[in-house]
Length: 304
Image (cartoon, rainbow, N blue to C red):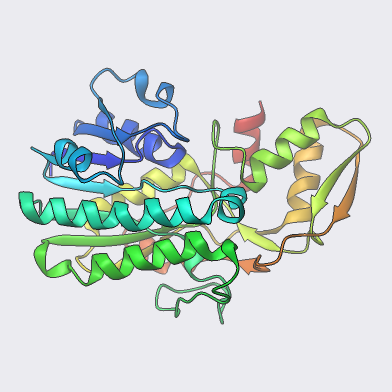
């Protein structure tokens, strides 16, 4: 598996994976239309080949996959704001994207595929930390919040039910990945932006008692590389940490890093959020994963 196509490769996570694998000596090609990605994220590495194209168009996918022997499929529309505002587009990219990728891979006889899912598929887990065997579902079909999770569940279903055509078909579920230059539609960059600008107070959605477990992007790509090298066919892997933090404590930590004295005002949160999200990471630990950054170290690296 030396020739890799990364769909969504100018996105935050896709670009990090593309740069990492290129430095490891792999031939990396990126397919993206830069609707949310940034070409500058991969531009420093002259070895990475960039193809401008749309994952929802079969011909674009065929052109990009010709000559490849492995696919990292990450193309998606992420960010909670978009789940509510553009659920049709979110589903369009997820559903057409996975169908095109699978169909072209089968036609070109590409035997290795790694599919990006999401922690969103768990949503209301029965157990924290949440294992990969947890049942996945859509709690409310009428709430556009679940457009992204729905698309990811379909991605998993389509991948799993076409696994017989692949030597290695693996699903990975990222959990709250953060780092420099990520999209603004996520809790950490939103808080950093608000706190940086604030003089007296910031507004926070919800009680702040919701808990999340964040993983720094450098740790994420190391974990993904272990899955790439050691992961088993037809397996699902959570990628994250078990370092839980309340959102209000996260905000206070960022305020402290900025050395500011500001208060936090709470406002109503949109319906559909989940209170707690922490993955079980026993499977990636067995592959050899050890995190290098705790939340304070990661935040300091972003802010300073």
